[in-house]
Image 1 (cartoon, rainbow, N blue to C red):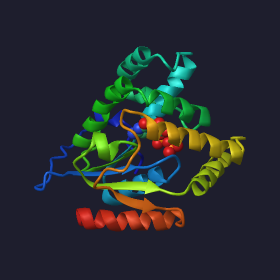
Image 2 (image 1 turned 45 degrees about the horizontal axis):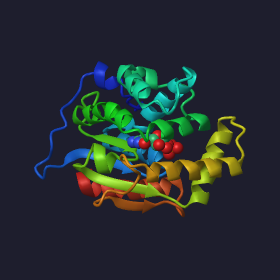
Image 3 (image 1 turned 120 degrees about the vertical axis):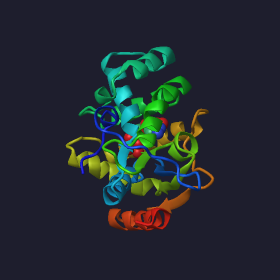
Length: 237
Ligand code: CDP
């Protein structure tokens, strides 16, 4: 399965993700700090379950990248909110999203309440009307279980210690040919986590009913297996 981009919500047939009898949405909300492995788990879960997947970080990254490109002031909430409202979902998907500078810009713009509001509808619409007529969705980000989909049937909070996460992100960047040093990756990660946790709007934190998945001592396969067990119990896959 190719990843469903937000744009496919608008361009391909959609299904109705009706709440189940218990009021829960057929959705998996995955939140967690930088480089905790949310995306890898989320993509694979969606593939296995036949759900649509949305990496919500790509929206904030896309917005950050466009703002940098246009030389916008990253403190200008109104201008950034306008940009978020007027940019087509396709335009958020760019080749430079994984750059460290883009991640940094993403977390700056993501701290703004009006910017988050402008991107929230898109995420909820994706969950309520999964693209390609899929029967459920997986969204990963920072506030999916707490703010965007409080009724998700399964909420995971994926984490790992700082060293494990910095090492993973460093290797990922190296593979992409990025020249970042480990020390720089670690300090960027710490700064971004701190900003994401301490902001007043939709801070990074586990929902009360989230299941904690600490992957410090797990490889990607083990982390996925654990998440898939939990999903199977929830959705009877
Ligand atoms: O992949 P990584 O963990 O580095 O980050 P990401 O999920 O791509 O998100 C990039 C940045 O966007 C985060 O540091 C957050 O500041 C912001 N973000 C957010 O605030 N809310 C979300 N639902 C997703 C991302």
